[in-house]
Length: 136
Image (cartoon, rainbow, N blue to C red):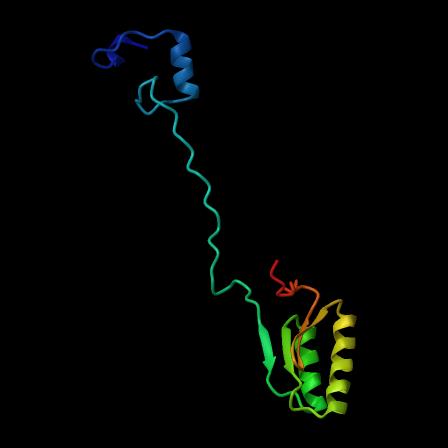
């Protein structure tokens, strides 16, 4: 470096220092400055409107066989179904229960009686816990 090219208060530098500056130029920061800290990665935000919700369909009065088909279609798309067979005749209630039990079995689901003539049909992706209500 020529003495005319020296900055104010700068001493002549050796060849290694000049070579280092050419390979890794500095932005006039001190040699002892801290290295920049990388910014932490941000996780993708979970949007509530895109999160998949659980859907439960409640059939208050399944009285005809067509109601059983609607329930079966809901099971096939992964929805839980609560069916009240109170208004069905005993023969129709038995037919509906047999049909929906077969559909649920074919889908590896579960059937739980949750009340008098009220049943929960759940597909395989739903875990059903039954509390017997016995206090110990």
